[in-house]
Length: 272
Image (cartoon, rainbow, N blue to C red):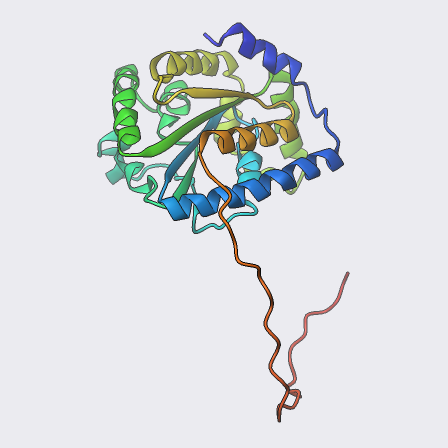
């Protein structure tokens, strides 16, 4: 069961209660800190793994975008695996996820993860109950090994209210920029709210451990959840502000004998 305080937090976080100006100001400060954290991760060879799970339409994609838009994609690597191939289906379940875990100096972000088995696969009948039970029993052991190898493992569950989920999914139907976000699976899943609730509760009960806890993030306010999660990540990854030499742009070289080209370039039309 989700704790009462978590349920209260979801209800209290109704929609956006922060202005765009305040949001952008706060996000800018957090982005500066993320760059500092990135430099520290590289310098000290830290290994950070961040798992994002949650309801359909809970804002995982937007949160990941806010987290990564000002840092290097060579350091902050996003992993969003497609459906498994026939070969991968025959492997040990977590096998296809393990190669994506971070090496020294990397932050790996899973946009959905091995927890698919405890969520969508279970609810939609893509695996047996025996497979689910085996997964829930095995996962803490695997995550203990991951943490023991020196990985900082952070797991976030984003939760919306039924009303907010409906509003967001309906907006995908009518907004041409968002139709790609609405898959046939989303439509099938939409009607099974409480099946997902039961699956989520069982997942928390089995895999919310002291060495790899779940962090519950109410996300009816997209702006707030982005800020809160980034702030929380910064608090979980120890880092310091590294000293920098003052950066001064060098002088440009002189033109010399260079003459501007008269080549007939194909210039794009200016429509705006």
